[in-house]
Length: 564
Image (cartoon, rainbow, N blue to C red):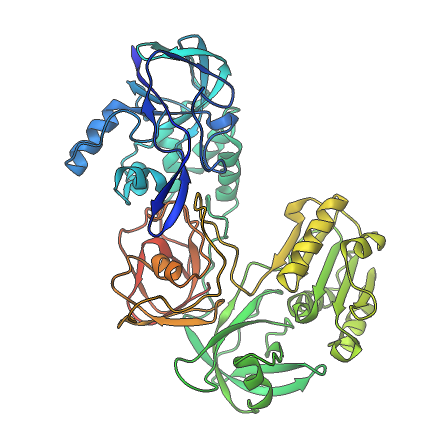
């Protein structure tokens, strides 16, 4: 008979960590007597990051004394008293390979249902001083699991644990954890898991992504095999002024290898050398989908380093080092209407989409909505008119901000179809405003896609003191290792062996990063590796997608360029 040995609670608190402050509820302590377990929590307990912990489907965390013994032997140390793994219930029995998703248990006056394994979170490693623990929990098949409260009631140490129902398909906690996080999952068993009503919605969504060929819990889609590795020289074939501030650059091969067709909406990353060293790296959207020559269109920025060089000094016949076309902001197949919405130079990726739609004689309803400062800066006017004229159901609306700014209210007045797929590109504030406006009108959030060439927004769970600063070289003496370039941030710094990973180097430079486990499990940190080679320590449980890197557990072998 399984037994509840200890009931542990704790309220979130601020904890120092690597120069930051983390708000976390992972510190739990045993309590005497009985406590009321409610739908969302145990009385006296709380969670710091409710995106990954807590809520109805993760009200109570369970961990086993057998696993305590396992880890004490593995790390050759005493891991502390009950609650050290952040669990609410420390139990004797209920091993992860025998408890199933959907099982129900009676403990004291309450009844519970198993919903999912513990999420891969760095805070349990922080709590126990073992940073690799999140990966080890998965690799050793000892994650622990969450319970949903079916019937509220009092519980206390010493209560017997009685299983009242076995979950359908008998998918164990250890098995379902491996299905998501380890290589080569059994898709049949994933479908069994999806048939379990008790499985939490987050895991349901992740398994649907796995079956569709995407990644697991990573918010950034996994990579596809790039058309070529690293940088390839391309020759400037033509330079075409498009407006007072925009010039198009046509790039062709320097050899007999043809250019692979890009997806409409993708971008190129260029390495140029206007002056000095190292050569700066910048990304520009393809503004056409013609594979015979890659066209990028560059707006001159008065305070920029690269764009003035590309416009004023670059000549026909010059060569540029170019990484293969990348990006997930691409035109999707479908039959619903399409909104192509752009601000300023953000027109380029949606223009490539318009070219593809026109080439396909697409019968869908196409809405072209563009805003720029004034007529002198309105690029591609005739080109867009001709493309739209070739489509049977096209609408065009142009706003000059000096006369009539494109706002959510102005967009709503156009009455665009809300069952459309919207593609929005422009300054970050513009995209945020337009996206919010479309959603407020009733468009589903997952149908509004945006593209951002600046650094992506950070995902740093629990970190409370993060401040958005312009990326900069790290403090202290410079490193002596290979060059690490953060392409979106426009920053190149030498590697320093004092950094544990590329993630830690990026953080020291205030380059916005995304992570959760920090040990190569969850793939939240997965980032396009534009050039160079890396080593892993520890090895990730599952390798990243082709052309990608897990920056939380990797170090550069030579000069690398990351899409950060």
